[in-house]
Image (cartoon, rainbow, N blue to C red; front, side):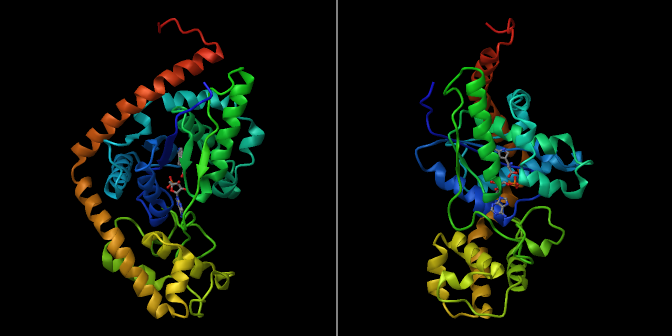
Length: 341
Ligand code: AMP
Ligand code: TRP
């Protein structure tokens, strides 16, 4: 039971459209891993989306949009399992079991909950608080060993390890659940807001100018980078020179992420350049890289029959892996299971 085959799991919430941080910090990296020696499972985590209010009239469209993003970026349903979470009920079942493993003290340390709940902690949903246990269930339901995510999800993957270790220990099932590794690499694991370099770029920020949406057209992308906040200094000739300049650092990291180089290489190329030179170069690069993806997304989103078919097939494949692991978990915990043989 201790030797787990390498398996990747990751997810993106359909809580609005995809933004550049989702692409550089997550989906683009998933595509890179797909080519390696991993079995890969990618999920549109719709059960996570409803931890904050989602209009039922929009949830399906958002689910299809995230799916289109995965496909357009290069996730191939013949190579990876691609599905939406709510079509595999085992996620919700294992999450309940993990709610009884995770400790309240652990949940209280989750910084994302504190940030999201803010002063409103009494009014947010219980699901928002419990959400990391559902995320642990997503990962461990497949005995996944590697979890590529953006920097903001590191603590949740660490909690997943704690849940796995406590379960294995409490039930005398050493090695049953693997302790998955967070994979947080590359230059753009934390893409920042274009108007405020101290905040993460997100789907839900108040102004559209602070993020690049995966569906933005070329003119919009160029305009947003042109208006992105910077400082008056030109680009330095070493990475050190970007210290204390979060907006400048962010644009360099985005350039590195899109061009698949390192921030150091970008600095070497643009040492001494002013924003009047760098921003148009960044806009051109972004249009070149994102344009084909957004065109393909638009095409796919028009073909909802095909998207729904991909998700249904993916859910079947996911369930075939998940159900035996869920069944074993129930058995280990001692549930009476006379319906199943
Ligand atoms: P979410 O949209 O919150 O479901 O995030 C899906 C994935 O995208 C997770 O792995 C996040 O860590 C990643 N992600 C979201 N926003 C960013 C960002 N601004 N920079 C880097 N990664 C991000
Ligand atoms: N919590 C992640 C986010 O908000 C999304 C997510 C849900 C996830 N389940 C997951 C990521 C499992 C990796 C693995 O971004």
